[in-house]
Length: 227
Image (cartoon, rainbow, N blue to C red; front, side, top):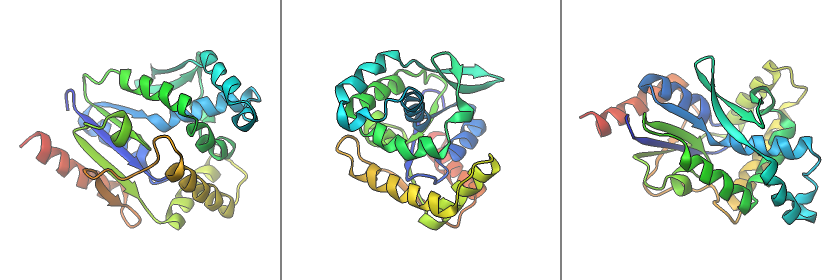
């Protein structure tokens, strides 16, 4: 995997990050969850009462990007996301952040800033990056492009179980609405919409376990890189 790039894109709550993490462990390469970077910016905007400027004063919102410093640091042998020097991993997946992240991600200047950061990440050991536009925009020449999808019901149940496990006070209907809304926004935004590239491998994991997916993709990687 030295120097190789695997791009994993897909709809919300299809297990992109879990799959990418498993694969990075299998092949001893770096995993970057690009979606967490957009969540970090969203968290900053929420905490600083800036969300209201998405519609009323986008220029002011963009000016505040200079105050946002996003880093991946090794912590306990794993890469963790830090926002302005603080580990924010535990705060990224709240429903409050989920409800706003697609709005933040639709701002072209924010996407441009984060795409630049993503391209600058060291990939000498090989990299598996997941998100919404990794294969189509960030790394259009990635060695392997994967696109994950699944039914709304399955995705919502996965996300709901994850949130409940973390102690969140949400209903399944809340999660279904959130995912449908994010799908609509992701697919229809003007800048870097969620698309399936012609050379991407489509994987519907509605009825596939993560072990099934890892096994399938390991075979693809082995055939592409090691034969």
